Image (cartoon, rainbow, N blue to C red; front, top):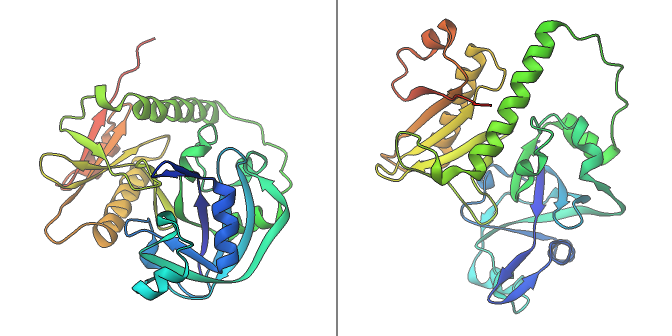
Length: 292
């Protein structure tokens, strides 16, 4: 059994606005959740999985939970008509059935939970992890959302190494935001476009239980490119992570003959990182410089 966050955001279709809370309540009444062909993790959804619902801007709350009563499947024309409601927006290509639905009288504001949610690594820019679609989370994070924040332990005294790692992490947290805001003016060596879906910008793209910092496509060659910030990780951890994410993209998104490459963005290339990527033809390292 897996645990998921289904995110619903407001949409404007053919001049008509569909508010996130309105969409959530309609689909709860339908005992059904619509999915798109490119919805991340769609093929992994299974009957019996547990789901919690995040309703985005402007209310930004976890609003309820449910259990999947079916695997994800492609709807027939007749099935699509049943959940159509006379609106093109509610006419999905794929979906899942729901059961044991709970709509909470007191929704859980996301900002109260961010400090305790482990899947959100970059706490300052937490919203990038909840753009829309389907995201897998650990059972621990699922329980944190459904039961409330855990009591926090008293912090241990920080060493000089801890402070240095925290400073590097904070710098790369802002680097991610800088890359996001200045994408078109950054020279990546090749022309990259972010891989976008209806609900995802390509930043913190859901990949099973993990998040890809930036999922992109090489405009010239048509291949997938995974960009990952080293962000305080050891060299071995950074390389292992990007290889895992590349494998996920290769299995779940890439078409036959489509390559998947990886780029690690680091402040510097130390000996460990240099050795770790040797022999990996599809993984490269790019460095950045910050001028104050």
